Image (cartoon, rainbow, N blue to C red; front, side, top):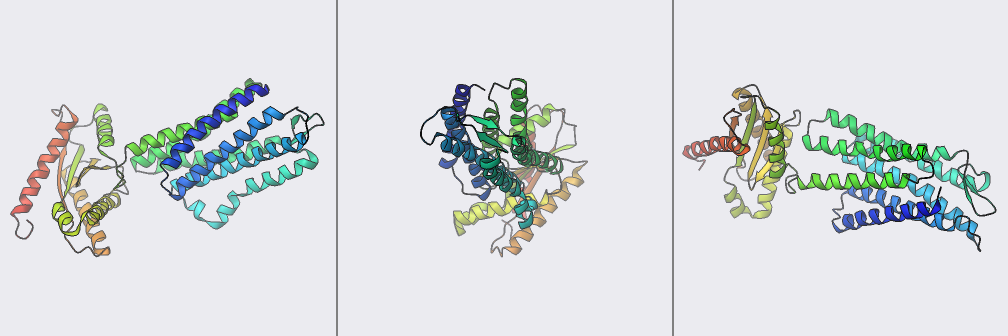
Length: 384
């Protein structure tokens, strides 16, 4: 393999990962799973620096050159394996998996890392993973494939697990996130095949870097579609989702849009302050999540104190049942949190009609029903 190519490729990968790390640290949210993602990228960054240094000194003779060659290869083998372990932790935590929370499973998941540590140490004596000859040239050992297999074990396991979870889960945003995680393994796999066909072209580091870059960009795009306060879809994602549904020949009378408005929200804000107002909105979002946990309904924050649901239903009776379920869940949350004020929704919904030419026509139909519901509520004594 041309060592100049290795050096140039690794420098490119280090620059790309450095840019990702800079962006991550600048926007660091300090969630546990975010820390594991950063650690995984850092380990990749370290591995490629070590490989770049190796490509410069390999075959060069000077004082301590062999020791440095062993050192950089040790760093590469260990950091690339740790990178896989941290990626496993990140993905499993993102999926709220019980696997990574189990102490026994967590210990077992570290075994590949411990095995590589032991094999690297043994390689100084038996050359199992690699050895350095008298001319300071690096050579792969007979057990080199063990390192490759253990590193890919982490990414393969998380990709398969993410794909399975994405099929089972009903939440639209989580489906996208899990499928994004599942794509990670495909990049090293694809470039690995290229390197098998063209063994003199270094591609593994490129594949890993592209995988990190793809995940980072895709998850950043996902964050753009999420309302930061409630954790629900935002208006942009609503328009994208509803546009896709309507372009997919939505069935008349079966696709429903619900508009939900928090009753007397301005009074809550004015009386208890904006912090409590935000807490009220979070409770409302939580009620929507709980009420739609077992279905594939789209839920989002439309703006301010307005929320939205999109569902495939048979008739208005089913729509009324969903409204009641959301109202009941919100009542349960308020009772549990001992909320001292009335926190409730007004609902308006509309089913799709062929004469609705635009997304806005559909939403406005539900909004008109919401307006009527608010007016009816104001007529009732004690609810103004």
